[in-house]
Length: 234
Image (cartoon, rainbow, N blue to C red; front, side, top):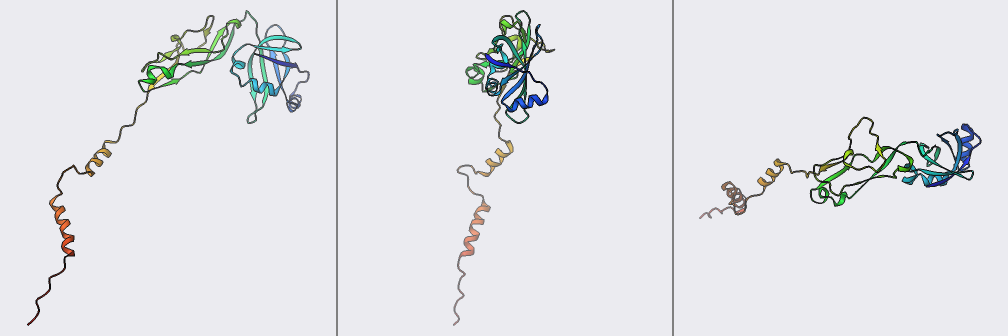
């Protein structure tokens, strides 16, 4: 991926503020045998570039004063609430110097796995980027992990995947971290007390009403019957 940078002559907080007003982003390039160099970039072009994954995880070609050099993005300072890149840092890349940086992990195939299709499981991506060490020529854009064969109760660790040639994982104390875990989705069972109460409220088919029920039913009928007339006097 290639971008264009321009030499920056003025430094300081005030100069950087005025530079941003004109639509430019201040930055710096350091590393290697050369001295650190102040640069500036077109903000609109930079803002579109930082949305691409490759800009963060691959070796970039920086054109400066007609010369192209290889660099890596090392730091990006964003405004707290505006869509504004306030400052950017790049590191020069030397062919024989190993790099240590984070690259994204891309998972594929889980929707076709046995765990998801037949065992009602959820696949959790524990690690979404991996820190690696390699020479610039061996730097991958991402680490690909195929989850097609994943099954219920199985977790994928770092040692279970094959890294690209020349790439070594930097785990920082964790020898074999978990990358992916599989969990079973459990359907909530109904409350037994609620089920028993509902069953008791519905009478069984063909059951006869209790005697008390008959008397209770007859009582209202008797109350509605007209009273007998007294015999007439002679």
